[in-house]
Image (cartoon, helix red, strand yellow):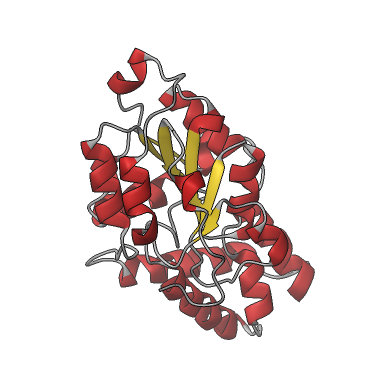
Length: 248
């Protein structure tokens, strides 16, 4: 049963015809945000800065450029972002060396969608080496037809370009895509791309305006499993959609 902080899912929207599903990575597919939050606090303390939940919450789902600007805004323009970023990455590599955990219901959902020959993509604000390495370590990289990273777009989330790029690579109209996200910037990006957006909150609870951009706010991806795997494909789907090949 969903707790009160989650909006009752519009299951009729989830069951509406669609042609492809696009997933955010950190905090949506991969259970990495809590680990990264701990690292951020540790590195900031080491560098002599006091991180807060309010500032960290604004970092979730942001690009490197947006994060750098945010930290400079809060800690001053002399904040050593490059050092901060290097230390965070090094610590993350150590902690994720053995395995990268996935979010509840993620493997089951992508496996079921793949069995139905539904094109799948990842759209992440992470750089390619980080994204591909973590998806490989988590054992889920093979499920996706294409992976769009920060290196593939000019404009990162909350701009719709990452999602529009993923849809283009899959040769699917964005309005016939379902997008899964955990962050405010990601929800804004997917919604702006015209996709039916499902939020599965990780570290941050959606505000009313963010929830209003979603067809559903779910506790886990398992809540979407039955409805997505039984929904028909779009009437506008062309034959080539079933033959989408990886462009990774």
